[in-house]
Amino acid sequence: MSPAPPTSTSGAGSPTPDPLEWLTGLEGVPSGFASTRDGIDALLRDRGLRRSTPEQTAESLLRGAHASAALEGSGSTLDQVRAGEGDATAEAAVRVSTELLGLVPVLGRAPLQAFARLHALTGAPDPGRPVSPEAADRLRSLGTTVLTTRVPALLLAALLHAELATAAPFSACNGVVARAAERLVLVARGVDPASLVVPEAGHLALRAEYESNLRGYATGGRSGLHAWLLYAAEAQARGAESSPLRG
Image (cartoon, rainbow, N blue to C red; front, side):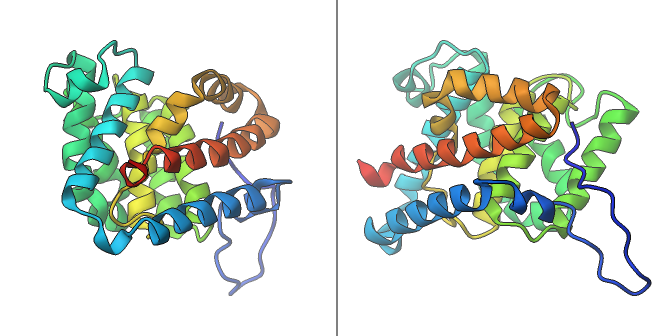
């Protein structure tokens, strides 16, 4: 589904309305994401963001790659992924994680290029190419939303994740792309500049809820969207618990 707001009109000269602002009025959504953001902020402050190391960032990205691959059907363990012995799906997720932080400035100026590059890194067929004109339109709409919305970053990350996962605009590995895009937003919007939170692990820990809420998002209209956002705030909080900063 496309998260279009209720129809409204603006007078001449009025500011362009934020396409996602209406989502902040859904019951429990603002408080859910605010609580998650507070938890992430506390983790990064109390566990030493200023003392974080490149090795911790690399470990966070590796944990995320393993979790994302598992959600995509990989049977590789974290130790196998760490040793470079993962299956093809795990290898694809690791390639994405390795270059993900380099796409932060790209997301801020050309989101479509960032999405296409994430897909190309998976090694899937037709790299970066939408599967249909409708998919291309959906991606363009998402790109415009990323550039224009002012909603909290956690909400934007959750919505972008669900849209990419359920619209499946690419030939394969759409889930890997969607989860990488969620993490990318958290870095680009300043929630987690060093990428120490592991949102993918949060989704893996809540796998049954993750999969059911994605199905609900795709088919459940406004109620499905609402349920996904409430779920996503919880999953992102679980992702903070999986940070290397916690040991």
